[in-house]
Image (cartoon, rainbow, N blue to C red; front, side, top):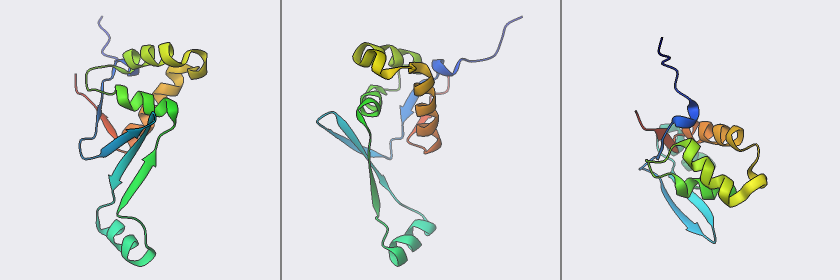
Length: 113
């Protein structure tokens, strides 16, 4: 009997194309436009910004730049391991949580396979 379960590490992340980002000295900053009725209200009455700038830490920045719509989480993990070694451990547990978070905030989605 064939299993239909897919390993989470086989997922292929794709960046949200509506986001802009830049990189300086190895640190990625993602720029997210705050749209919608709630955000417009908050901007007008509470002075919240029209664009949020989210700076990723070193490992997150490295991972972000590896997201190309072709590499799986597992493949990205191999490259992270080569670059950071023990500093990235527990590697796949951390990566799984990181990608879960990126997906939850709509910074990425997973390619349908």
